[in-house]
Amino acid sequence: MKIKKKLKIIIPSAVLIIGIVLAVVGIITGAKENYIKSLNLTNFEANVSSNGIFNLDINVSLADLNIICTNNIEEFNITAENISKQFLDYSTNNNTFTLRYETKKWYQTTYIPGFLHKQGKINIYIPASIGLKDIQIKSKHGDSKISYLTAERIFVDCGTGNSNITNLTCNYTEINNKSGDIRCINIDSDTADLKLKSGDAEFCNFVSESVKINNKFCDLTLSGVIKGNCGIKCGMGDINMTLYGNESDYNFDILNGEVIVNGDENPRSNGGEYDFKVDCSMGKVNFTIQ
Image (cartoon, rainbow, N blue to C red; front, side):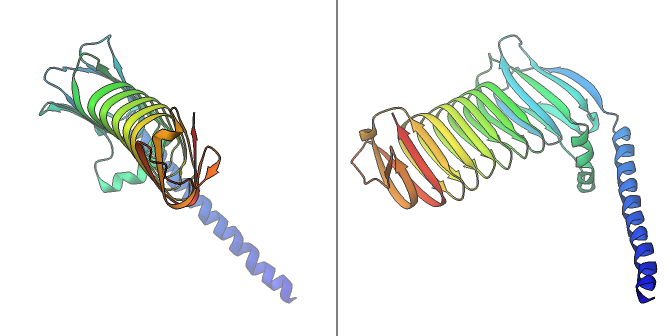
């Protein structure tokens, strides 16, 4: 009898809880869909004069981002798909082309999942004839693609989406990722800072004379030429580097952790021209020099 009484209490209670959960989900889903409809997502295109512009400042949080430098245009060209124009701002001031696509009020961040569900895309085409100095690119939730950029300094901040960077040439670059995968091909920068948090990172045909790598949880694969000093700090992620040159050119200073160079674990300094300082925590660093 006691079991029957308990069942009479448990079963209705469980049904009530499930009903409440379903109701809440329904309300949230309905509110999100209604909000998405109210955003009037649409396509968009605009041309912006490039006269007097030599800096770029681009921040896109709510859509995929594609930036490409091309010889086929003389003005900035913006094309967008499935975006809300009320969150898109762009201007040219102080020799800088600025574009923002992000929420403007704190409470609007509640609807970011709705934006991502209806993922939009913003394409920015840049005239190759512009002599660019500073470029700052930040993407937050969407995927990003960056191609054929040349400038004095280039800062790229990748968010939670995946990023693809190809043919980047500059005096200095800083490349950050948060949690998405990042793939970089043909990066040529005199000085480079790579700040990697998590995910997978791949750098192919990487060329530099001075590199700092701060790797926390990311698995990094890098191949290319580093003819200069390099500082590497590695947390829990693994680093595999293939360098093209002579092993005798490199002087390894192992501050901490497990480091392998051409099969030899924790090699001693050999008086090479380029100093590589490696501080490794729980991850592993493997160098192949060929």
